[in-house]
Image (cartoon, rainbow, N blue to C red; front, side, top):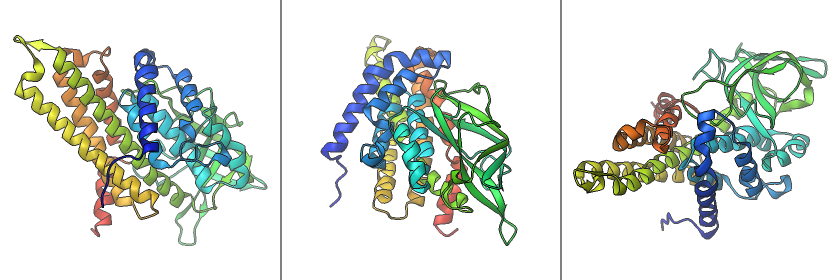
Length: 383
């Protein structure tokens, strides 16, 4: 029997985060966004709520939940603001999760409690300036010199990499060559403040303006050999798994943004009058909002299914790609329609839909572009 209802524990979490987003985030996030300022107080509150520790065991300071719990929290946060949501998503699925999945016992004991508490943030250094979707074409190198790794290279578009509480970056780097000549890719943990590791100024971005995104450079940066995360030469497989999981989380974030557009439009359509009536009485507006809600509903079911297969330990690559594709395009479509319904006010930063419009586009690019998702889906179909 199929049952899409949330159980009591999930529903309690969803309501808690919904209330937090509405009462703590919504009233202040617009100011952070316009100032392009990282919301440290909000992040600290999320840490105290346990959101950064949701999918991790209690032995590491986590909440003992699962990845679907994280997705529910991301959806509710993104209904109000995506900068806060992506800070949580990247902090968990890209910052802490690689250490939990592949790190040594010592690495877990040293780093996970701080990351789970939200007292520190981790980042994931994969993308490079000339790489884009070709994630395997890495130029950053890590050479083993005695008992140290020596890193050289540059990373681009790295979330949570330069905040005052950023503690580490897990860097994907070429550590040698395989017998067939292909690059051997491994993951190396680099703590913030390590000599030779420098962080650029914040990017000037179209959206996600209250989140932290920077370019990183490594010049003869030395870290202990013990900072290898997982097996040497398994870095490519590790980050593919990380990205598969992350796509489900980004799908949840996209659903949240799209639902936030519906929320705002329903409220506005009841209040805004034109030609003597609330605009929600006009079929053109009602049908737009109905289409928006239908898209959200479909996208939510897609990420629910992907998360369900993931938690059962079943293959979920295709479902994750479908969820990411559908939800990101739903977010873009709904943000565009919301701005249209709001008219001139939809172009003003004082209204959330203007922020949603600016934030939506990156969802079709980050964690694998829409074209990459279509490629993955086709490949899973045997094409």
